[in-house]
Amino acid sequence: MTPERWQRINEMLEQVETEPERLDELCGGDLDLREEVKALLTTETDEAYLHGVIGEQAASFSQSPAAAKQERFGPYQLIRRIGQGGMGAVFEAVRVDGFRKKVALKIIKQGLDSDYARTRFVQERQTLAGLEHPYIARLLDGGETDDGSPYLVLEFVDGRPITEFCATLDRAARLRLFLKICEAVEHAHRNLVVHRDLKPANILVNAEGDPKLLDFGIAKLLDGGASQTQTAFAALTPDYASPEQIRGEQITTASDIYSLGVILYQLLTGRRPYSIETGTPLEMDRVICQQPPAAPGLGDELDHILLMALRKEPERRYAGVQRLAEDIERYLANRPVTARPDTVRYRAKKFVRRNWWQIGAVALLIASLGAGLGLSLAEQRRTQRRFNEVRQLANTFLFDFHDEIVNVPGTVKAREMIVSTALKYLNSLAADAAGDPGLQWEMAEAYSKVAKAQGSTIHPSLRRRGDAKISYEKALALARPVAQQKRLSKDQLATFVNML
Image (cartoon, rainbow, N blue to C red; front, side, top):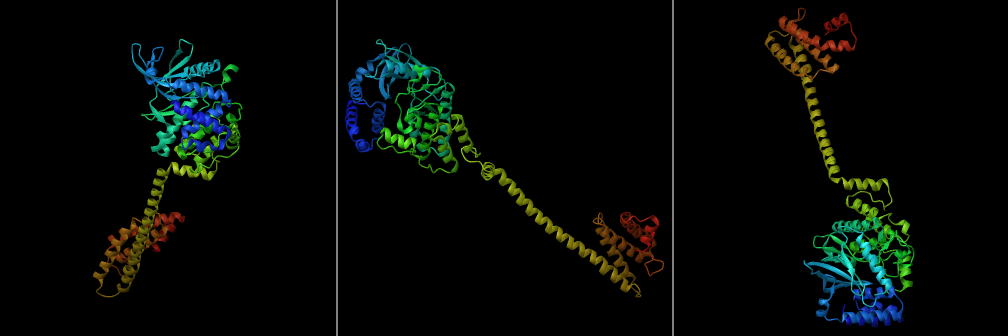
């Protein structure tokens, strides 16, 4: 940051103190400048303090680049300034004692090197020392200068703020990236550390697509004593701060869940859930602590997830970062999310979406079976129709016609053809007669008629008793199952056959 920019901030502070409604006008669309001014207004309201800090910062920043490059912190040589927070400035640096390694080196800003600031700075160092996670910038080293000023040596993260990185990603990819952030925050919570300043500027994404969580400068240790928990201060970023932070109430892991909700809201919609114009305490209380967030408009489930994370009451938010992550995973897997009211219809809808391929295959199979069944039934009807036609031909044409010509002289050859044709049809129908008593009886009667035409001794016949015997045996074989069903005795069966 240049002296000119600090001078501009100084001038703006004087104007905003008397005309807070002109903040946006004075910033002229420079969102970074607006955030810096708002942060300073929120951090301290003492005018002399602010002006003194700005003056000393401007003086410290007026060092020439050449002089800055010569500064050494232990074995580390500063290269360039890459950022600053509420209490410390961050430099790109390189280790030069025997081997070279690029690092990020954080020091207390000139003008803020008080006992309190040193205590907080040392606390951040201890906090980071207890966090080992691939998505949290690692603490590599630390120490003090000759005059006792502490410094931190951190993993150098060459990345972009998460909002910038996500600009080209689709919704699912943004959610999967956000799950990695949840993993990092959950790790901090398991180690009893609340970050308390989660925002896009503190989450960089490297070229591999992995996020790195930065700046635990105002983190709170949940298991510490009074000296450790007095990091609340007023240091926060209003646009991402929870209602309890705005009102100075107890800070828990639920505060980080709220900030994650704001970040996710911004990643998915391109805007924040609230619009803070002036940044005054009264406006922040009204907007953040009382006003409902703008409807995300992302759809039923994502809206419920976001609004649950952004609830005003800490106890009504997700019970932990893991619960928030699990709901996002459920959404990605088309499973019911816990943030949404549960209904049978909702679960059924999610089941269909989740198993659409299998359900589609089953539906196709059922449709195929239905079509096949329809074709089968149609074929069965056609077969039955042909079968009935054969039965009708055998009974009507063959036997009725035979009875008409049996007493006509010179028709022996014609009667032989009729009997031969009748046997051909009867033999083709016999295989289908099993299990059908009515058809079996009809077939037995037909064979009996053929036998009578072949070798009857009391009626005109072809005098072929051997063939007649075979036909009578076939008639008996067909009649016997019918007799058993009717529970006829042997004598009754004989009488039954003789009646044919």
